[in-house]
Image (cartoon, rainbow, N blue to C red):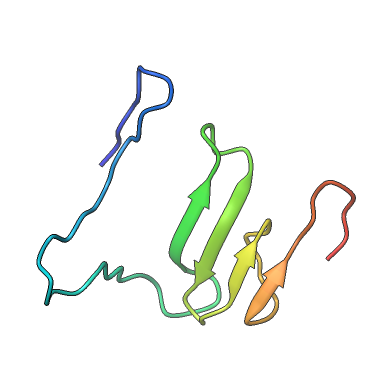
Length: 79
């Protein structure tokens, strides 16, 4: 699935569950540290914003999280 937007300030996609007793969103992905379960990048794919690796490690600002929660401040290179 590839969705290209042509209008500013519009969502490319949305998921809404209107069933009060239903579940939310399930994503099946990889199950090892070199596979992604979820990855969010900026509009052109140049910068990783958020990822969940198959081993459960979560990265914000990095696509190679080294811990359960790994924050990378790319403005000055600090972890």
